[in-house]
Length: 505
Image 1 (cartoon, rainbow, N blue to C red):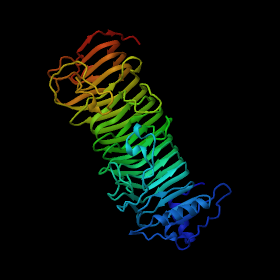
Image 2 (image 1 turned 30 degrees about the vertical axis):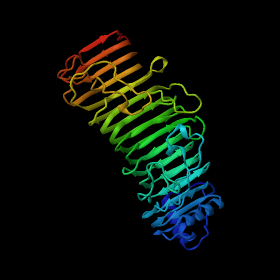
Image 3 (image 1 turned 30 degrees about the horizontal axis):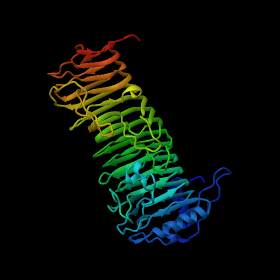
Image 4 (image 1 turned 180 degrees about the horizontal axis):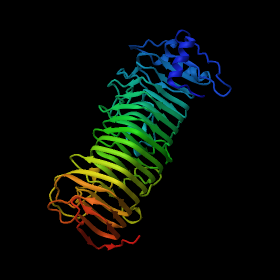
């Protein structure tokens, strides 16, 4: 089916008077290559749109009619549609919400109960169950939510573990091929505004999500071929998270993802995040022109906790403000995944033209690899300029404690550097980058511990009044600070132990 844009669908509805007959009529083909999709108004199938009557049955009837016709658009004219039951989506059907149309969640406790899942132990409850949602579908093709209307949980969706009949997400989709989320707004989604797992070929443009009073915005799990443009996601928990869990009983691929021209914020947690569920590998991600305006954990977070290899990820033209941890990468050893996972890897990551301003409590920007063959490797920072709160005194420059089962920035103790802390890393390069503090800090700007091939080219670091050095290098084979200086133009003070310098090209 070739879908209509929202405006074209409205025009078609007006021309054919579709709001007055319960049968959809396809418009004549404009040419031999394009046929307009038929439109089915939920009002023709019994919807009241009065904000109190249960319109779930009418919505399902319209969806069934569209699917039986070989595909079509289910239209919601302006109005308030109370949906007290889980709506079961079907293939080749797009739900179009007109301006002024709102689908409301219910407190009646009549949604589908969560299905049993033998893989419950490998991920949190909300990730393990999919049926208990306002809209649910499995193994569907070519489905969508478009228009300019709103789906609002209305404060009735659950942010924790729901009882039978309670829903904890707005949209829940598994193993779908072809999903469109364009123009609509998702509000008060409970645990998730949208949760998709095992899907492919996903596109989204001008999607708005407001779950700042609930939890997650959009979790994209074990999904490939995704394009997101002009998203605006304000969450309490993670705003936009890419994950790979074991809820479907297998390690699945992730990747070929592009996110551009978007705004993200997360009150308590992470704005743009990989993990924490990280069973299957991740590859080929491109993030460009993104503004982040708050994250009480990571602005740009990336963790491999359950054996995943994360590679070929690229961040460009990103501005962050009010983030506790502007950039964090961590390899952990939680191994919460089926199939006896090993320890994961993070490699081939680039950051270009990144600006970040932190707030308190602050977690220094960190790359934390595991020992042996599980170092973080091949990370390049070009024009990455960070300002952290600072305000700490001097402290030991030894390796801080770490909880290898915890992915949060606080799982690593207070970093002994106010700026970059690098542990178990290889082939890390900083070009034309800087780190500063808002308040004088007694720690060094950089500490690198255990690794190889560390290079700073034209790096600028603010000097703390009582800091013992500007950069401390511990057990690093082949480090170089070239053409680098403090913010006053003086040479950086470097203290090296158990390390070798190598500034050859």
